Length: 418
Image (tube, rainbow, N blue to C red):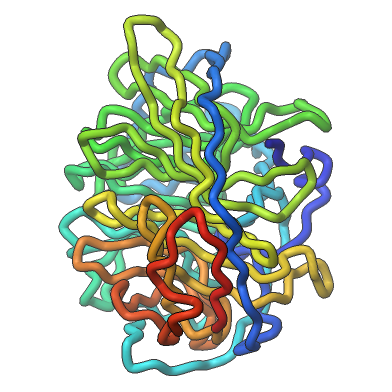
């Protein structure tokens, strides 16, 4: 159950595309099948406690018109080399991509419009009224923006030479966690919805990315890669208590998403079965907190896997009963370092059943976010530049036949054809 090696991440391939969006729009609109194999359940894994301490949180004073580049420069005004970006496969790279093809669909709704650069990493707040996202429309570095889902007016929250990405809005809507390489390494930060009171949550030599709040908002889960970990380096999921700053490792995994279901501590994530592979599948694990200082990730279950596609970027529905995710057909088949396979958004029940494809195979469709109104927001370049779109979660893009029924059980094979 290992991930890609550090050397392969740092060689870098694929595209930049807003951190998780790492793929070109090759094979646009192609008709390729995605075969979902039986789900696999594994025995609970013992977890390990991360030895490096976590910053208790040093508030970074941010005057209204003072840019992050001034704040981050420090007393010496020295420039700290930024860690490279991370794509959907957990690979560090510095490449960007060209735009895809234009497509239209009556069920689709476009929320952002980009003339240059790209938008990425959309996250809709629990009320469904506003969203946070990363964008590089005005500069090379990505910054965090917010806007109402029904408005074209955007508010820029960060502004500097560093990359700020992967925003995640807290359950009460009063905080935004995000990733930034403003201090050289990638670390997790938190701020108010207006961009004030920036607080550094993690520090040290590791690269920490993709935060997700627990249902009560008191903890964060994120992915961490230890620096200098060599060929055996793995992305590890870490949980941090925002009150005590206690930090614990819960096992290998990438881009975790905490279920909003308050009755259980369930986290969805993506993981490969072999080091150096791009063939990700979707997993869930359940945390159990006892009196000991060790947090154990139990009930580790593979809920969706494909024989010819990588399954990435899980996102929970507001009731915790469903997941949206992206598929990338034949992720290892590349042209100029960029995967060429079809990329679509899917929906699935939390147990792996009721799989259905939401997008039509046109252009790139990645990094979904399931909103409270049951629309799934995602990033697509179907308008010419990567921007944010949404569509209903209840209507599959293609009707299912009885032989490939959308209600196929999680422990049965099914071939879903676009």
